[in-house]
Length: 123
Image (cartoon, rainbow, N blue to C red):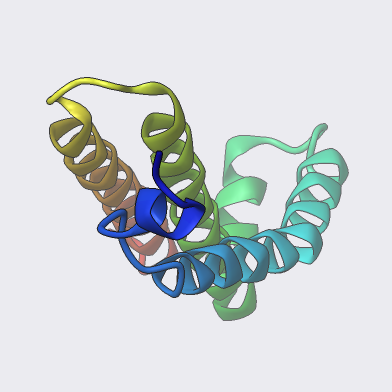
């Protein structure tokens, strides 16, 4: 017979999850206005041609907001998928899966940011 404290000993600190929880909430709050801006912009440019869309994306404000959207989006995605993996993967591949998700989200964010800056800078 073990006490609840004895069962919990060695399972890790309860403090480490707070930063992850806050990061997920902050990224979610940041995504609300950025997603609304992006959706409204896409709807407003739905009848535009390619040249008008590129001209819109070349605006410094638009390019900056797009970069912020990509950062917040992929940060939030990585945090959420990490929670799913930690909750539902019960094998030795858990650590590798978390690393793969993190690297994939970083690569996708970097590709999106590079594409945005490439269009915004006219290259």
